[in-house]
Image (cartoon, rainbow, N blue to C red; front, side, top):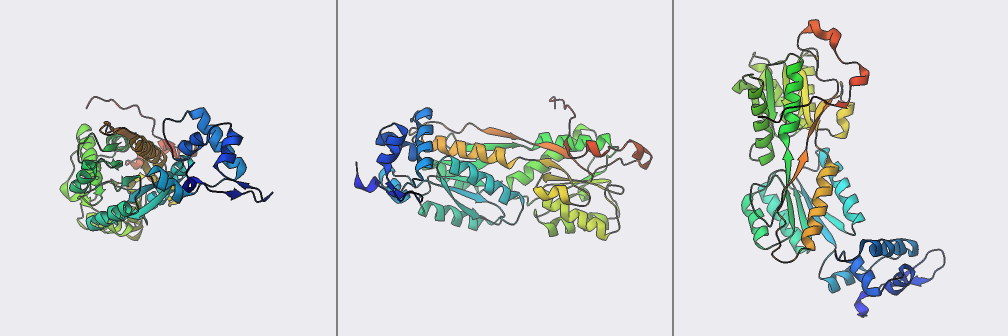
Length: 376
């Protein structure tokens, strides 16, 4: 065996040193099987790999990652690029991504773009310099030339809502329409027809997609949308506050507002409170993402859930599949992530005479159950 592969660890309880041969003996496999398992070679039998990982845990064996990289040609690192680390949605997503990646034998390298295209380029460059084995781009909007360049080099890559079509780019497509359609129909069932929408930055593909899904859903119920009620925010608290004040300043006020993310919706709640308007008595509000603090706003926020676990599980699985794929193999089949409405207490009947029919506590914080027709 190549000496570079050897990494001896000691058991804290006994002081006895263990190496790869110790793991192989404990698992009842060859050292080659241990090496392939540690290096995430996909051809290893699942039952054998399980025995190897159990032996590693029992012996408290820690593989030498530098030696692994030299022998396998892989760093054991996955890159994760997100849009805005201060947005509560992304820490939850990062935690989920790391949990899944570590279970699959990888460490992660994280970068945030703050919605800046130049920072996106810098993030990718730094990750390539660190020789990551693959990159998950969870920015919900990325410059197509950069994405295309990475795809041309057959680099393992997964992106959310990629604008580029390539068999070498795995795309996680978000079904924004499902959740936003549920939200619009939920509000329509409560008597609302005058609805506003506050988007994210419109250079992001996801912001355009969410706004389009809202407009299509409004057309479906036959409700017109005034241009003054469709505002471009920045996915931040101050953006939601400023956009809501701008809508109120027109003097032509809708009865409900939907937001492109929960942080924007929290900014809207702040603006409405400052203006003396009550939620949901005077205005119904719907967010998007279902971040953890959505349960703790006052009142708790009705929102559209996009599961970070679904996103990260699909992303890690896709990257590992690409890393193990044969050269030229097509891996670009899109995977769709569903969205669903979660009804809490920021939406209610528009007609005050209908308050007696408002949902009770047992109905709150539950996914919207309306069965929607797929004919559209």
